[in-house]
Length: 117
Image (cartoon, rainbow, N blue to C red; front, top):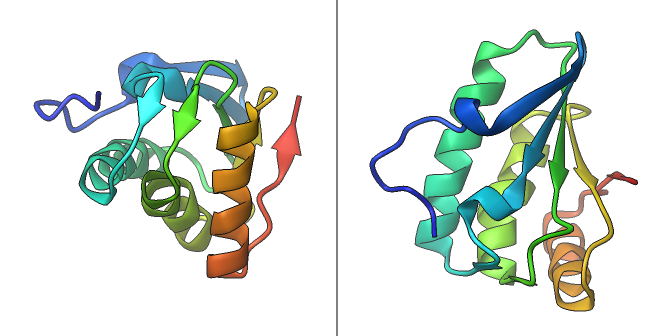
């Protein structure tokens, strides 16, 4: 569950190198659902990205998330992709339900979600 008392995901991000950071989406929980919860997660990640240099890429690891509801995915990853083009990618091996939700975001937003392993 997303921490409603926190405005920042900064404590949960790891610097991989000077232009690349890693965030484990499971910090928000293993079952992520709902647009309201997604907005809270987006606000935390947005706060983080807005403080990083514009050349920085944020890799969001979804490998430990079991279920990612399309509404949550759209509100977080979909909005991040629109607001930070070229700066967000999805890392890890997504479960089938997570992959399907990410595909829904791609279709509904008309964006491509870059995946890394």
